Image 1 (tube, rainbow, N blue to C red):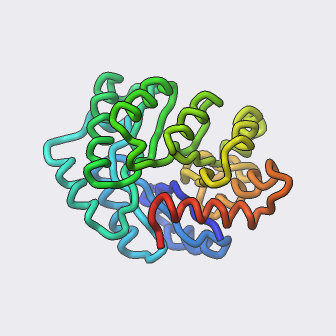
Image 2: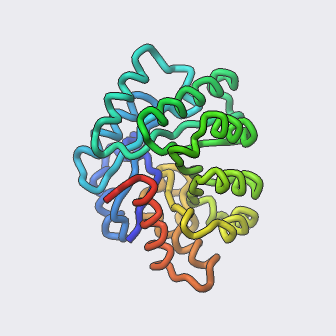
Image 3: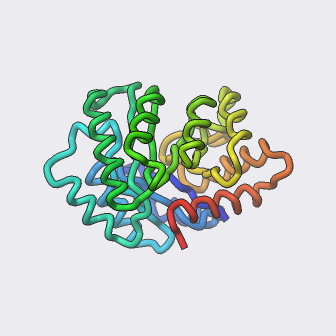
Length: 256
């Protein structure tokens, strides 16, 4: 059994067949999903989805692309949503200097605020970082994020970031990127991650793994990530990877 720790099940690309997508994943052995908030509307949608399905859990928060839109009352609404029993994390939050859809200074300010809010709510954080490793780690350390823990989702950083994240007590989550032919360095890093800090995800509908490249990603394809990680650990089976990553996800997100 597997847990897809990072999905965007509210995405419009699932509007016509969302229930079928969920059913296919369950048939493939995915026992639970975490669906992710990226702004206020998607956080509310994630909670609504979690409310409808016993095996769907939600995170709330504002993605670095969207922090320029944070309005009056957003944080109070997140405080309200956090009381829902299916909300298990705060995120995805962080820094993204590749696109800079929100100004870098504002990204840093809002990231800091959201880590503080996550600590107030006692929720682990889901981190997005792209071309911003040093600033991401600095803010996490300064805001004592190790007290609540969290995960670097869709990990695609270098060995330095992996080491720093692990030393901070965080988990690393691998997505379909680890199956890409040109991801040799990422596969090497994956072999160095302690097995009790390893998570798997799809980040669907994005980052479709091999051999499904070119199609819309969906949670059923998290099996390909588990398969790739098992191939990187010759003494472990896909079932071992599934069991370990599921235990890790349940521990981090306090999923019974």
